[in-house]
Length: 300
Image (tube, rainbow, N blue to C red):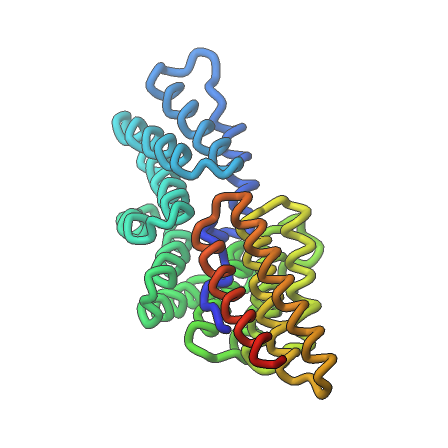
């Protein structure tokens, strides 16, 4: 079973997005003596960052939008552009890829151009517009120098696009390049994304045995960060890997054991998704369990 979606809806467009949002929340704390409208904008931006950090993407989008509108009203285009980008990220996290894409396309601030391009690429991938996403990523690669802060995120998106285009070797190269850039950083969520993509690329290339340690590394990180949707997708990927390994088992006993492990992984994905209210992950897990059950019955 192949799945093109190896990232949850929560976007990983910037390697340090969550940290930057939290820093923005601190920086946006209203200062004594600031004009009333500026105070309101700062409060709204800080509220958006807090909501995003706890997974309230609907509330985050609303707060970032309020901050953006206020900043436009007192002619602060740089701040308004920043919150337009934040609002687009929150919309993408809700699964509103078209809205996020439209908003990101309207961001005109030069200092935000690369981040806006990466968000447009991610939105196009979510919408299944692979050729458009690839064109945007090619332009982003030209704009992103060797020491570009967004280079790891760019590699991760290039890996996603390569997987969607069935170029497993390219996907693996990009994911491994991202992982190398993320070493010795505190960007655990992006490191987990890199390991997940490495596992998916190895599975797609037929290297299921070496895909499993990479998927397990992603799962360990996502458990530590308590990210239910990523955990659910990790278990789905582990189930796919175990299914592939089981298909190549030499003995019936090994095949039956692998089939049992596969079902267990899909069941863990379903349990996590049900507890967290993740309908799309639960649907994928239910379908995978049905297919795995049919395969198990056929092997008996």
